Length: 591
Image (cartoon, rainbow, N blue to C red; front, top):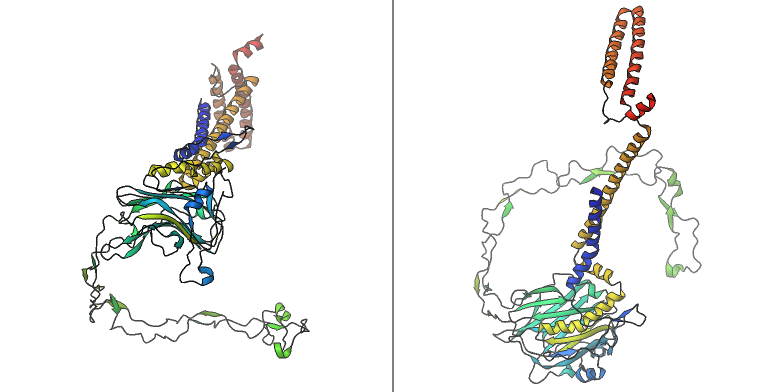
């Protein structure tokens, strides 16, 4: 019964271990509206992609699937970058609309930066300016660093509205923007920018505010050469969320989580306040009454030659450790005037290998027992200590309180302005909207299909389990338990089966030989035989003791008595065996 229970437990845990990762992964997946279609051979499945229909509430929704529509909407910059050499000032980076290089969906295209180490800028206007009022602001787009990223960005700029529309032909690095959002990397520094330009309500000055660093790691998109989805959500209550592939990697509040903060401090240090000359900030001072001991020698060296060292016997003081190589020859093209006097290279003196050493012998250095170093007086509490001085606080003349930083400068266009050391940077599926549901739906119809295509081409469920487990490392502890528990149960089952098998073999052996067992009932008469045996043993022992005490003659007599008792003991054992024999065997013997 116990074995069956263990087997059931083992099967249950095994089933749980196989289903747990897939259940967890399924809980996090976004529902895909398009279904995979079975191909004619019935073995393969193709993810069908259809270019999404425009969403009425979207300010910009770009899939780059229509070449003619792209050429009409998007504008390549003709500007020149200021403050750089003329030969690199022009925005002459090459843009193209094409499918991604690996695992592309049929009919899907994106915007690709084909060149590297060149300035590139391209932009597109919104259907109408986005005004920050009572609705959220949502921007979302895909990036695939198809060749990885050495140094450069893949961020976008949401250009500020101006009087009239923004001149996109003159779009450059100093064109005013309201928000900059997206990945950036140089060296080992990985960033996911969220920067907004805040307008000072007192003087109209503009200052960039940088969001805190993401709490999760964001290095993988720079290395894996796969498409990734970046989403920024701003809400009228000043909260924000940054999502990477549908997962929140950064969140916070515009008032609390930006550097420098939106609102300046109410009080600042008085710039005209200075520390008094008699202000003593030293907490400890040297003891003025301390005196250096007379035997303190500051000139004593830290190490001295070992006075007990003796030069080893056979040491050759006159032999140098290195000698010119006798086999070396002066090169034929050596010019003494140009190259100087030629000297053969030095090699180890072969004579020194057969003796303790060569050259001038010096005793080894040891620590100097008299070394004390530079004397310094003991430190004591400063009686004049007044603490760390701080300037007094005054009211900040530049103080203001903006409780609605969400109400930023309106946005008129989306621009991509880059300089990168990597090429083939793929942008796709850009949307600007005031509804989070629009961005989710758009991702379901585009990015999520690409994920399905990648999972299908890279192991499907197994790859999903691995990816999900890497994001949630605690699952590896669960997997370890799921492996360890069945192993323990299997070991226990094997031990139980081994014990049962041993018991069965012993029972079969008793049945075959009819040998008495420990738990067999004792027949009448057997107890008397055992008593006689014990009595005989006692008498024999007593006889032996008396024989030893009385001498050789008595010892012989004791031995005779012992022989008689042994015969009686043998007789008792036979009777005992007869009495404990099974009734069937005894009857057969009588017959």
